[in-house]
Amino acid sequence: MSFSESIKICFNKYVVFRGTASRSEFWWFQLFTLATSFIFRLYVPGLAGLVSLAFLLPSLAVSVRRNHDAGFTGWLVIVPICNFILWLLPSKVVGNKYAEAATTPVWSGTPQGDQFCSACGKLLQGGLNFCPACGTSVSKS
Image 1 (cartoon, rainbow, N blue to C red):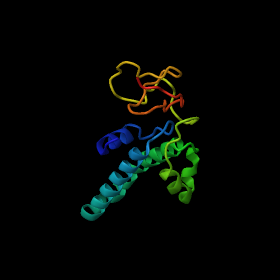
Image 2 (cartoon, rainbow, N blue to C red; image 1 turned 90 degrees about the vertical axis):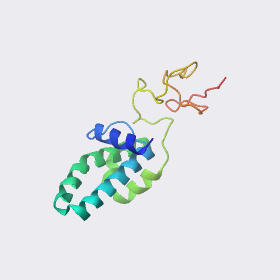
Image 3 (spheres, rainbow, N blue to C red; image 1 turned 45 degrees about the vertical axis):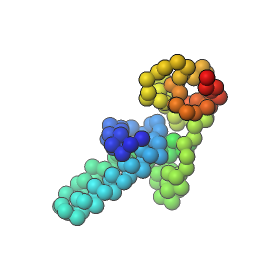
Image 4 (cartoon, rainbow, N blue to C red; image 1 turned 120 degrees about the horizontal axis):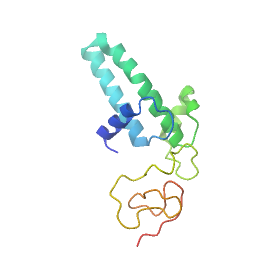
C-alpha cells in the first residue's frame, strides 16, 4: 500500500472501528500525522491543537483496526506499551475473527482465470500459494 492510498483509506474510514488495517496502512498514516503535526507546530502553532484534534478519531480508528489485523481486540489501544508490540506484529491471516466478511475482495486487481478461492470465493492476491481470507492452499497453474 502506498503512502497516498493509506492516507485516503484512513480518512475515508475515520470512524470505522471494525475490520482490519495493514501494517503499511497504519505506519504510513502515523508518519503522515507526525509530519503534519510537526509542520503545524513549527509554522502555525495556533492551529496545531486543532490539527491534533482532527487526527484523533482517524488515529484511534486505524489503531483499533491494526490491533484487529494482528488478531487482538481493539480495546487494547488503552494499554500503551501493549500497542507498540501489537502494531509490529504481522497480520493474522487464518482464523482472524476481526477480518471483514467474505464479500470484500482481498486483492484489487482485475480478475483473470483462477484468481478466486474455491473455498471462500474471495479474490486471491497474486504470488501467494494460499488464500489470505480462509487459509486454503491454492495451486498456481
